[in-house]
Image (cartoon, rainbow, N blue to C red; front, side, top):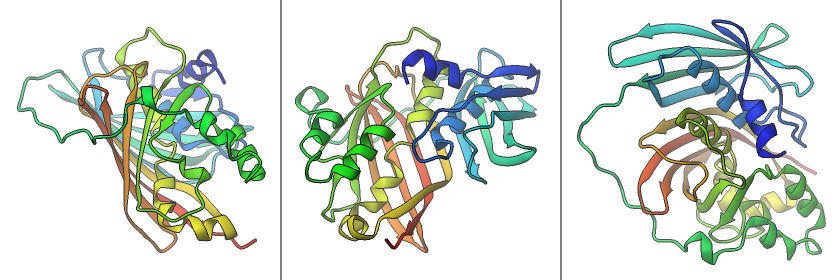
Length: 286
């Protein structure tokens, strides 16, 4: 997938003022990628709000696995048009069944108080290998997992993990993960598209952070992952063309569910977004 294809996937076909249709990113695991419906639902909501309103939060629930062979229809409910805030609800359908629903809030630019936490002190992307370069040394050691990694990677983005990529680990570790990311090919598009592309990529690696304390067992028995819900808050303007640090941690895993949260920073330390996700993390016996 290249940037033109990704933009075509995120950009929906308008059916009417409140209804839109989207095509699917072809995954190797046979289900629709959660980041796809996050980005497409946000795009649908953006088509129904005034141009002076920017998304500041979105909260989505994954209801059913999506069928790669069916287009997704998005219906937008214009819940509220306020003086400063605009609220939308979006439901995604396949074969007349809801597979995902999302609420999003948009706000006019306002001046106010300003503070943030510090960016973690990690190596800069200039000093790190990308995940393809990392994976190359594992192709003979774990060939099956190496091939899955190559096929599952959204190649339109470049990732530089701080430490070994989660999917290649066999040893248990603390549930803390850092990864730099950016688009490989630059886009010259308005901020809403940068929001939508960040929504797409924010679903990549976050839930896997919850697997870090269990990598030894997962290497032997495997695990089934599926997103259950996902929340994303946009704090400050940014460009998806530039390196962004995804700072991820998993405070808890229980009852076959993993919980993870993340903070996203620019290279200069500016915090631009926060993310939280819970997902199914079920043991599979070989």
